[in-house]
Amino acid sequence: MASANLTARPGSPLRGRVRAPGDKSISHRSMILGALATGTTTVEGLLEGDDVLRTAAAMRAFGARVEQLGDSRWRIEGQGGFSEPEDVIDCGNAGTGVRLIMGAAAGFPICATFTGDLSLRSRPMGRVLEPLARMGAYWVGRDKGRLPLTMKGGNLHGLTYRLPVASAQVKSAVLLAGLHADSGVEVFEPEPTRDHTERMLRAFGAEVDVADQGGVRRIHLGYGQKLHGTHVRVPGDPSSAAFPLVAALIVPGSEVTVEGVLLNPLRTGLFDTLREMGADLTIANERQEGGETVGDVTARHSALKGVVAPPERAPSMIDEYPILAVAAAFAEGETVMRGVGEMRVKESDRIALMAAGLAACGVAVEEEPEGFIVRGAGKVKGGGLVRTQGDHRIAMSHLVLGLAAQTPVTVDEPGMIATSFPTFRSLMTGLGGEIAEA
Image (tube, rainbow, N blue to C red; front, top):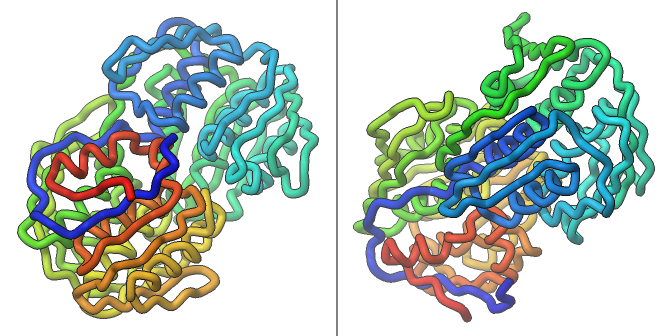
């Protein structure tokens, strides 16, 4: 990865039509489910970022044949299970990858050791390991389950589990482990989280029942489910599409369309919030692809106003709060974002880093334990050097800010952008943005 800083400069309006990279959540799951299935799985539109490539390498280590065919097309030959890896599974920066892989691996009588980069090793895994241990998996590792850790699986029991906090990763780990438990598993979630695992399990042949019980969502996976290879078409990632779309909203004279964006209602909270802020955001050509709704999203420069983002919307946009904070910086008035404490245990403490980065660019920000408030003034001075701690979303968000600020904005450690959006710089410059090495 390049080590040079990147600087974004205000300049021309952004214009054009682009396609977002494949959705990261679905890309991870297509690799894991393909490896767990029997037979051939083909994947079209896979996100070929560092995080997903780590998951692909992990599936090879567990015995699947994983082949890159070119042009974001991949083939996975699954054996219906995992074999014991010969070496440590290094998941790099992929938090979603490691948590889902641990869930899948727990179902088999094998030992596996997991590690990652410095950021991933600092992130607690206890929320995933606790239900897996209740099912019968055993692990040894550092305090709070931090990596590196070794897990031994197999002989799992069924489980009824109520998520203490909304987490698609924990839910998915339990469901993946439950594929090889001695009875069914069910998960109750206090707030609906992204449901790609449930949808994709069905696409691979499993029966998954989802129902509302007194306002709580119940997901049930019965005993003895078998997965069979299938074809997966990965839609465009709404979390990645957010960057060029917000850039179009804040750069005067801009109009950008991102094609083929995933419109799963559990992933579109940012779009709802931006519209409430007054964004000229339209969706055309809605269609079904691979069991998901997708569409072409167009954003035009807009006069934005501050809003209160409903805390219950957080699960549908948890990764988009950094770029929402950038939109808020250019809005008139306060934008209040609360109930987002999960941001503090992502790749970095995203609340702290966004508050610091925006403040360095002249934006008034108030940080809270479980959220933050951005006091927008319709324009942003810019001029800051933003410390990203290697967090890709912090870097991309501030580069978008720099395209509309009065003076350039520089971010450090931009190499980590490749974990989720390896074409970010070329896509943004192709639309007319000025982003260059500093």
